[in-house]
Image (tube, rainbow, N blue to C red):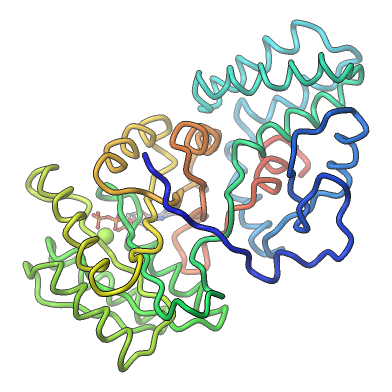
Length: 359
Ligand SMILES: Nc1nc2c(ncn2[C@@H]2O[C@H](COP(=O)(O)OP(=O)(O)OP(=O)(O)O)[C@@H](O)[C@H]2O)c(=O)[nH]1
Ligand SMILES: [Mg+2]
């Protein structure tokens, strides 16, 4: 799977004038720490990059996961000495916690190697290293959409995923999310396969207070997208256009062809569009989410993931497997069914909330 060239900082993330060694201004790791001192510097100065409200939502949505096997990892690191048992227990917990075999082994190996080469003796320091290795896997390069790029007048986001994963709901939530940030948002009803899909999207549009550009059921989605881009650029003067797509057509081949067509229509009208292709994955499907993502990735290049229904599952560990095995960042997390139930993803908040019972 190829990731699109994203980039670029949003001002509010870079608010620290004094940045400790080895950190980006937002408090993120810039390099692999070479000694224990660095590890401690990093842990002391790291900070979340998302709003407190998002942190709380992320934390709450991991309640079930924390109560599961991953929540026991903290207890493993309560002992006095770093012994082989610790690594075996960690490996088992990660694999059982839906992190996936490959990613689990990689995490244990990376943590263990750093503990050994850096001469770490304290179990609490080893725990900190584990968290940092998790963050390393989860790090996205920059926030989604390049909203502060003055050369780009319209940002187009294509929302894809299998049926029932939560695309339409997530579009409603995203519209609300960006509206609250003062952005002008429009939505294109690109899922013309089911009449109900268009109605459902219009309801979300009303809730979020944004325009939905739709054609009749059965219409060509390419034509809908064409009109939506024209409307977004002209009368609606939008910053962001979110395109809903079908999750199921008569055949998988048709579905992938349709994605490509929508993509091409967007590309012809707006430079470098779509600027984001966000793949919606249902967290409750655990490791199957990876297989789904690989299928989509084969025909449309995905730039990020929206992981829905994190609130309804104990399989939150799958976030690590997704980021590691697909090589694309998780951008947003669905934390419930309401319009406000969406959180921007932050690796540190996620890791702390995942592992610390009292986070
Ligand atoms: N608990 C919970 N439910 C969610 C979340 N996101 C979506 N859902 C529910 O998942 C179901 C499917 O959501 P849709 O948005 O219709 O999914 P879709 O991908 O558009 O489905 P199709 O249009 O059939 O392809 C709905 O009942 C949503 O309320 C979430 O973050 N948490
Ligand atoms: Mg839908």
